[in-house]
Length: 148
Image 1: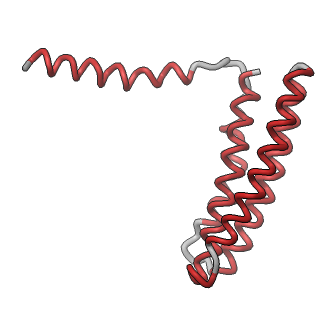
Image 2: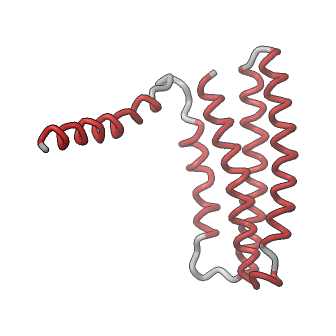
């Protein structure tokens, strides 16, 4: 029984500390994600105000999506300048495909979370889901930019 506990303890410790290896990056590289999170903080705070009306959410999510689009374009350009020509072509193809995905995903979000099925809160859900799609891509490109 004690060997079983020791085995489980070893596995748990290994799993917990194995994630630390993913954090090894170039310590001199700029922390694009931390800087991004500072820039997005006021927009998130505006969205999370408990006194928001449904109309406020629509305005704040539209503003946040505009911010995310700007961030996406900035990090895409930053990453592109760091890559050799062959990788630039791959990045461009990837981004074009991602934009097609985003547009289709937004259409799905709009048709799924509608006033008829989900009432006035559907606008909040649409804003959250759309923002998460774009934010995830921004973060993904920032990880790439930090690597190169």
